[in-house]
Image (cartoon, rainbow, N blue to C red):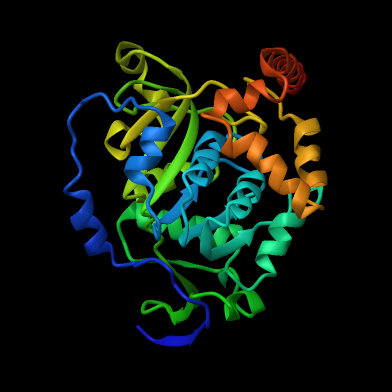
Length: 330
């Protein structure tokens, strides 16, 4: 195949599909309980130097409990996929968890503004960056989920994003058409928050999903956090609702409100007041250090963090607000 051009960005993960397949063949297909705490899951499956992906979209259905635990346990020198990343990116930057980044959407928290601390970290020179677009990273996950080393796409050609990416321009052997070849992205470990899971890891999720189903199939290890554990009988009653199958999953952690302070479709609205507090306190590094000690390092788990920020009374208000929006959309 004729390679016409290539970007100068690094590829931080091995796109070799055969090596990935060899690993996936070693994973158990047994129907056995994978239930554990978030602390146990991070200790077991998240290691310094690993490549990490977090699911969700923006501040929606993000595994915040896992992001906090990764920071709490002091993971370092990781790679990270900054796909549609907002508050989760903000958290990981606070812990300086990663030093290699595939960047598409970072630093910004959508209409909420820019994260001062995330910006400082990205401007510090501590992070090696390759540039992509949201769609480019989606294509990379899709290639990995399909078990191939790359997928062709028709985006980023002729842009500086291509120049600073690890993509290549190739010529189609059938038509001569030019395509951008996107290398498969196989994360070492990913975490995805869902609405429901059984003890084996058969998962249900509602609302916007973006690339989570491809990420689940592409990842060597997958941590699931869920709002609720449900029975396998309920899963079997209607398998069409199962969007992530058990054989992708390594850990199942029941974490009600696990996306807080983010949004969870049909469950609870985002805590905009607390997210604004994050944004404001980040302006002063000294005060931000105190804030992190209170909200992450001194908390034993996600539930203690929630208690420090309004507890069940706040959550019930956010639940009512989400129900109001869902009803209005319906």
